[in-house]
Image (cartoon, rainbow, N blue to C red; front, side):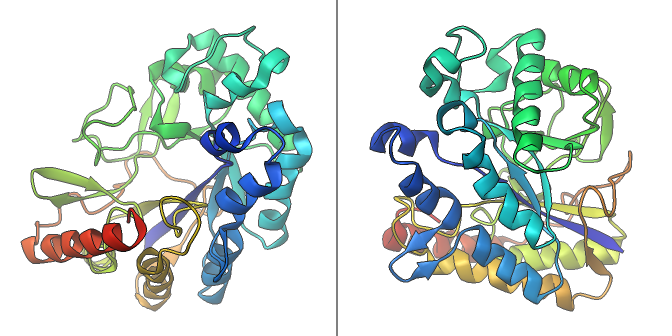
Length: 322
């Protein structure tokens, strides 16, 4: 069976908090977490609706750092509905919130966009604080982690080892210029023990010029369905897909991106209908060292790639991104 991990980076937008002001927590929640629009919501509740309808358990990597600005209740507002519906909460971390924290900054004014801007000891402090916020918000102690912007490095993995967080999923072979600085390359697409932590790469497929990462906004439904079918045929152990709490919205987060919304819903259905595939989480089916994580060896299909590029051009015209 190919285990399919639908992982959703679930985060208040620090950029919106800066733009709208520290007082605007409710609006930032609406536009980052709830996906609220005049035509309906397409945030985490909608994503769980689609997963629940098809028997899929999601992995929500929740960023607790907004607690520095709004208190733990802001994190609990995210964690509680996820746990209430039986999905998994793991740990995410965007250091951008340090710039908004003021006197609450645990690093005494040190800021940075990515974790890899900090020393190993500083990363231990930040991850330990984020974990404490997450647990105080009601989540079980996390066993898996993903850095905001994929911005981890080898020191991040050593920090996770020191904190007994077993898994990381920040290595993204399908983005050549990502913010990830872990010393693994595009050929490292299997689950691997690295710097004492089990690294679970984000899946990828072949595209023009190399690899493309398996993210709901990055691949068409046709490409994701083909990747899943390839994994099942080839006996690939797992497919690790990324989305975000706000990913089914337009770039300005004011309207539904119907193309990406429908893509997400269709892929949930495809998982349920594909014999040999099953939904998985880090708890229900822990990744094992040596597991292949996607369709990186699937032959490139230029027709599928071209169709996706055309679909994305149309989505960009309609929604400013997709």
